[in-house]
Amino acid sequence: MMAARQIAFIELYVSEPKIAVDYLGDALGFTRVAESADDESRSILLRQGRLQMVVTAGAEAARFLDAHGDGVADIAFGCDDVTAARARAVGAGAVDLGTVRGSPVVGGFGPVRHTLVPASAEVLLPGGRTWTPLIDDSAPEQRIRLLDHVAICLEAGTLEQYADFYTDAFGLDRYSSEFIDVGGSSMDSIVVRSSSDDITFTLVAPGSATGSGQLNAFLHRNGGPGVQHLALLVDDIVAAVSEATDRGVAFLQTPGTYYEALADRFPDRSAMIESLRATNVLADRDEWGYLLQLFTRSPYPRNTLFYELIQRRGARGFGSANIRALYEAVERDRLIVG
Image 1 (cartoon, helix red, strand yellow):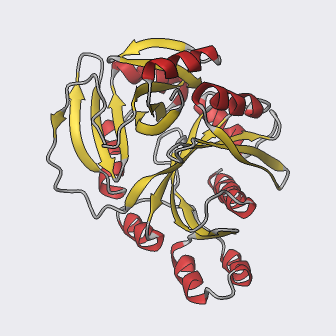
Image 2: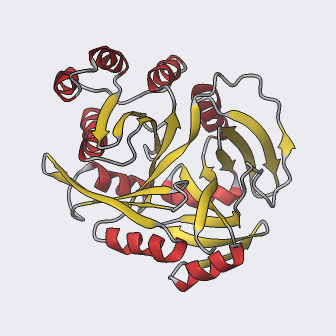
């Protein structure tokens, strides 16, 4: 089929590779798997569960870093038929970026590209590079199973355009939409998802091009559209947050009044609420179940990309309380930090 089926790897361009690798490895529990170097760059491959992260620095990344700061440069799609997938994407308006390291590459949003590789049931090393295996004895217990979703911040007025683009170019389906207004600052969102459920993009945009809200601030810091955060699925978020906090990860704080209101929404979960309060974890519910989540502060110099830990207990979607929780948490932190 021509549609994108899975995310094969995500490549970050970073200014301080050791700090970035240590954050993912020592703090978030990824294992350093292999390294690759050439005249243009040096890359480290990290893996946890089915999620592969490539951290790249050097001349290859320099222009991206100058314009956008540290962040996601490539979201590689696994496709059943790479040639057909490329033709479909280009036919739907994607910019053809040629062949890089033996794989076709097309433009996505802003500076972020999509390398197209064959879909596989196995977790494979990204092709086109000479990888040298690494022995990593330092990785803590692994909590992350897979990438739950990618949150992409777009410019005001372009949300429908990109939702249509990912539907037409890569075969993703519209899943849900939401509009949030918090204190005069607003966010519009559309979720698109692959039929395999292995690719989920939460597309978000400010409600207007003007204003001082968090999305406008992100677009300014990032020099335009980009990946706002990566949501990492875990089985036990309380343990994952506690361990990551002990290893130096800074999470957004939640006011105590949130948990007083939460007790009314989850009257049969008093013990759970106390453990959530102790770790600042948020909760949301839909018709299928509930989910738990918490967001990190950005570990990067320009305060661009950040991460989310999320645990699903039956919940499938992105309810209004869930999206509002993210928006309000980041907005509080933005106002506090200044």
